[in-house]
Length: 295
Length: 253
Image (cartoon, rainbow over all chains, first blue to last red; front, side):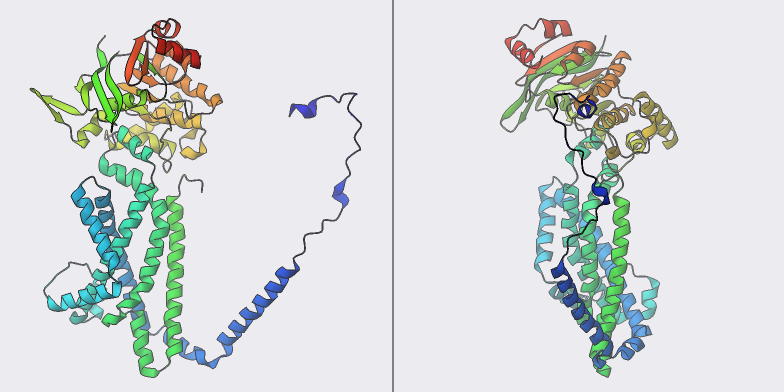
């Protein structure tokens, strides 16, 4: 500032020399009630932890016995397969539906709208039972879902039908939600971006793939991660179809040995571990798509 | 001189609002036309019809001898497919008021995107020419920066380099300095001036009267969807014949 470099004028009143505060001790604000809250919370946490360790009802030795048994590991693998196929097919169909709703054709728009309306209206469990019974009625119906060879080596032919029905149900249900998430993401991209791409003559598909989707991904990803995690836990619902996924197998085991609580803990800990891994993956994927962004 | 841009009785409505009410304009090869006019006079819309970002309701526009958006066969005009329109646009550079750089791509990626994907240039060649263009707009050290790391003036210069990368026959500028801080306007106008001196055909919509005086071969004054008058900068800016032009100039000068 120029003012500070102005020569002092004679008329200016003589100001007292500023006191030197640097020698004084700084006393921070005290928060006694915060310490009371911390103490109360700490007691509750300690009680809970104490209960986890000392309450014999948790039966941690049973938990340890079953946590990594072959049956449970296979069940975790089925759960992961259901999640993977449900997500992959659900989002693939969801992207198609989203662009149908965004298209200029009234017919495509209303088909997509009706699909989304219908599949958001039907409870997942009802839909799953419906598909389960449909495959029961039409044994030759082939949905062409690619299953890896690892799956066939494990399951009987009868179970493939149930598994297909489960994947189909999860994917069709997921597609309705995925479509809205993708559409929201595309709408969030500034129209100026599309105009710039069009003005540069960039081919249509390339505009989508290179300009629109990478920017839409930023708003799609947090919602999509929510959906994947909720689908992952939601796979437990296919236990009604006697598919050997994690929750079904734990139920089978505690039905046999009566150790309900430790086996529910086996399922719980697996769900927590895998959700944590998904959240970590989400962090890295989001970081990839935030290139060039400031927040 | 041949006409690079030929606009004949172009009309355009947005719903019941008549934005363009019969525009006739010719711009010759190498000519710099500056379009002035109050807000809502239709000047941006006119510019956007030239590369078919807006479709005209009637009349026609040709650029470098080919009709924009249509193909003529005998006595019929066939609407072009989007793919062909995109191809036409690669011959026309467009610079936006808000730059519209792709924020997730680096400066270099922004510039080579269209040459690589629309003109199918080899990447290496596109990168080399992008580096030359960046040097030309004075930003050779910003190739790997993201748009958000640049000032508005720098972003607009990148946008100009991006438009030039297609080696267009015609450049359209839609209020290129209106979104800039006053002290950044000069650096962008200098780049445009430089292009004008090299004989680039361009149509510039702007509010910078000084720039119009210095660079324009033709000044076009628009109001309420019509061209009120056009002529050399001296004719239009110093000796305007119409009341509307006089009123406008007295406000902005």
